[in-house]
Length: 274
Image (cartoon, rainbow, N blue to C red):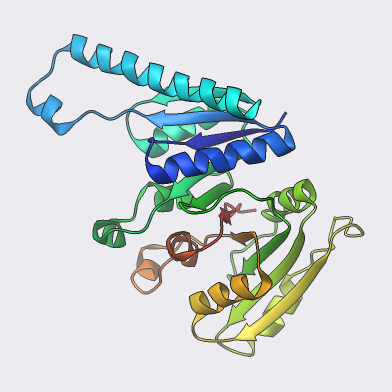
C-alpha cells in the first residue's frame, strides 16, 4: 500500500489539501499520514510557562490530530494515521519521512503574504529541501481525478532524468496523458532540449499518451500559466533547480513562483543528482 503524508495546521488551505488527498487515497487505495507540527505561542514563552502547561498542550494537540485522522478514516473509508511533531518544520518532516515509507507529500497553499514574498514559507522551503515529490494544492481545488499532466521542462545543465521515475509513477497511476512543455528565450535552446529529452529510454511507452511542445518566450511563467489553461491540465509538474548563492541574486525558482500562482495542483519533483 502506498503512503502519502499530508501536512496540516488545520488552516483553510490545509483542510482543503487534506480532503483532496483523502479523495485521492480512496480512489487509489492509499494510506495517509496526517503530519502536524505543534508550536508554542510567544505569550507562553514570555510567561515562562511550566513543564505541566507544555505537557497539557501536547496532549491536546495529540488528541486534535488523532481525532482528525479518525474522522478522515471514517469519512473516506481509508487507512489514516497521524504524526505530531515539534521543533523546526523541515527537520520534523524529514523525521516523519524516515519513519514511514512515503511515496509523496501533500501540502496546501494559500495566497502569498507580503512577508512570504520576501522570506518564502514552509511550502517553498520544502520544495528545495525535501527529497520526496511534493503535491501542492491551491486552497480552492477539489479532487476530480488526474487525466492530463503538463510537465514544464527547463533546460539546466545539471538536470538529470532520474526524476522521470516519479513522473512516470503519476502517469501510470492515474492513466493520464502528458505534455512535455518547454519555454526557451533563445531558439538555439531547442536543439539542447531535443538532444536532452528521451522519454523512451528505459520505459515502455506503448500505453502512454504523450506529446511535446516548445515555444520561444521571455515570459516563462506567463507561458506556463497559459499552457495550463490551454490544455485544461489537472496537474502541473516541475523539477525545481537549486541555485547557488550567486545565481540566487539574479534568478528566482520558477517552481516556487508557480506554487504561489498556479491554479491547478503542482507536483514538485526533487532534482536527484547522479
